[in-house]
Length: 112
Image 1 (cartoon, rainbow, N blue to C red):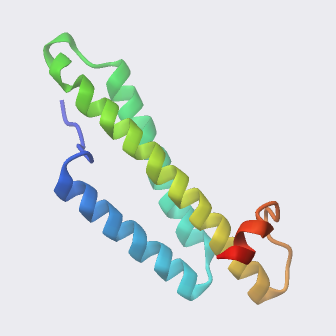
Image 2: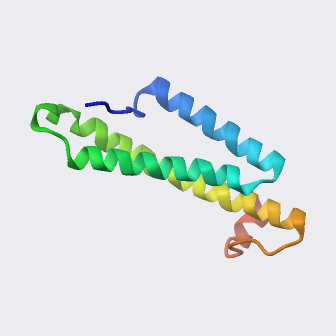
């Protein structure tokens, strides 16, 4: 059974670098769909890890803690990428003089 182990330090470091670079690219280009792609990727990773956790065969029971860590890391990346998406959406809305998707975090953006 193939498990994409993002709790491995090297994989985790590469995922962090890729996420930061894509969010920076989205912020520079002022395109919120780039941050949305990152968010959907991590949602797909969460679904994949959750399905693997539920359907784990008995002979791979020692992989249960690894999958649990992967699910926790997926949630952390989803949290970060969701706020990055809202941030870039706010930047894009200000550039195009339109209303952003969600203005409920204006107090946060004023402090950033």
